[in-house]
Length: 402
Image (tube, rainbow, N blue to C red; front, side, top):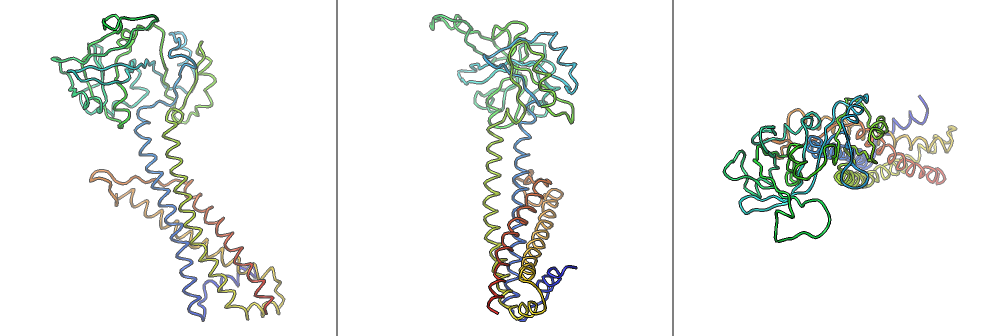
């Protein structure tokens, strides 16, 4: 065992004759323990909240989405569909039409986006799990599935044949249109509400799902014209590895977006919040490590006679400094590891036994992630290194005074 490490362990674990030194050392160790414990708990809480927030959009958004680079639509025919399905890594894909529509029901009005989808849509997106009333679309009649927010605003109910929901879309084309004749200015379609979905407040008030054929007729679109193609990848496939193959299938210029790019604002908000909380608790940890600096300095002052003896026996000034630096690092690492260990146990207990509840049926979401463990460990290590180095520098002054 190296000489500085041996002396540092003796100073750290041996009770000092000065009771104040013992109290300060215990406070410093508790401060490091509490800092590591709270930092990991908060990071795990935010990781759980992030996963909880994204699970709603993950059920709705595809792994990849092909969009036109300019304009609203692009050409995609059966031959291109066959080439797309042959790409290794693609599990399935669905053709989509999206456009803004005006909703009219019992003299109540609202704006939404109609989303025309084909039969493959439920193979790409987990929309089935979001249906809270009624059922998904069938080909038997003109049907739509609306969001829970839209349903509340308009007072919609499923399979109400007495009063149908009216969809209005401005007719495509240029030139002046007579506003006195709605039939000349708008395409109109009466539909039955077959189901109501609930994902989150934003999406529940945004989309009205319909069959692809109904959406094409309403919007006067050609047979092979679409606004998007949504793609589901096979497990373990990296989107960037096949992105060039996908874009080469399309004749028109298109852009390819992954799930994070489709929810760019949400991801930025969650990452910014996570960074802000990390910086705040790192500042708290820095303040706690001032106790380590104070503790080491007090030990140096208390051990001045020992320092003089060690120097007389042949220990160099750098070795003496290394003793107190090692003591500070041992205190930091020991407190940090114990704090991290206890925090992991608490998070695990929350995952297993749901100790903290948001509602009677919803436990507070947490997640144990390796990256958070590494973040806490390296944060404690780097800050502890700086605190120990600063404190150990006082040993030279103590040596000079002797």
